[in-house]
Image 1: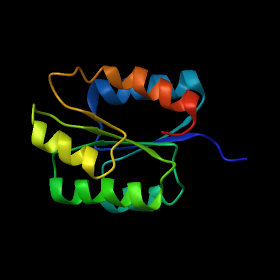
Image 2: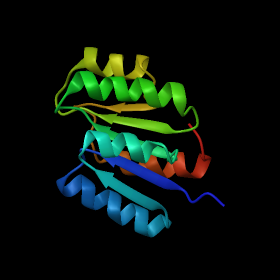
Image 3: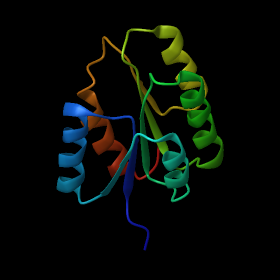
Image 4: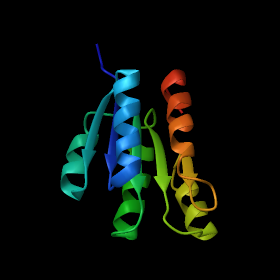
Length: 123
């Protein structure tokens, strides 16, 4: 049986801690990485949810969102932006993000979104 898992890329600090708590409470497997190559390898396990923070290499990160959308259609993708950028948020949606969280939307909304995605099983 396939265990439900969440894969995160570039998530740190308080948000990372919240996701760890959520994973423990919901009894799902949380896999965290900040390395691009490791992230690509971990995506081969087809996680239920992929959470990505944009900012280090936006071109590669957005290409990864598009790749996940094309190759893993059952994987929900949450893209988190650090600044209010409607164009970048729109681009994330266009490339296949299930949810794009950019200010002024509070990043804390991710926990309720993840709970919903885990209940539904697919985006």
